[in-house]
Amino acid sequence: MTRVHPVVAIYPGSFDPITKGHEDVARRSLVIADRVLVAVARTASPAKSELFGVEERLEMVEEVFRDDDGIEACRFEGLLVDFAREVGAQFVIRGLRAVSDFEYEFQMAQMNRELWSGAETVFLTPDQKYSFLSASLVREVSRLGGDVSRFVSEPVLRHLRKISGE
Ligand code: PNS
Image 1: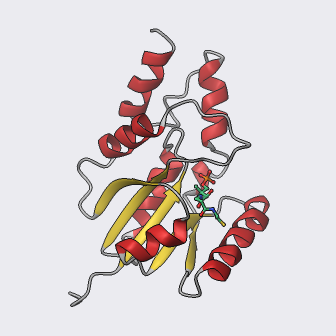
Image 2 (image 1 turned 90 degrees about the vertical axis):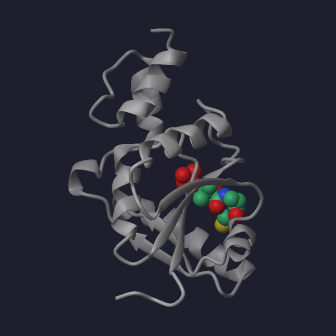
């Protein structure tokens, strides 16, 4: 069905770096949205130590989705709800891997709605084979010299190799 107004979704995150689990969620989002904006947050949570700066994280997202129609990479700073309003997004996508994700995600969804009553969050689950996967584990395994080639796509591997001096 062709819609008169395309349905736009934002899939926000730190994406430090983007994993195959993130990719899976972004591609699944196309079932419910015509355009999916994979939005890299400039300011990640202060509790998180960054591996890549925002420009490089964005570059990896662009490279990973180069051939995916309907998926676009962008970055944002400030509040997610302000960005969502600015780009006319109908909803925010977040991935839920396990029950343990739920509390944080629920809190964020509710806070976003407090900030803007129009904020709707849709949760999608990645393929089960990615249910254990997180960017923080990829960072750690990669930093300690482990093989992360099953967990991230080739462009991300290239960036990881570059920083480890290979
Ligand atoms: O991949 P992450 O780190 O779980 O993503 C969290 C992110 C970036 C989506 C969240 O921290 C966010 O939306 N940051 C933007 C600032 C903001 O709006 N904070 C209030 C969220 S309730």
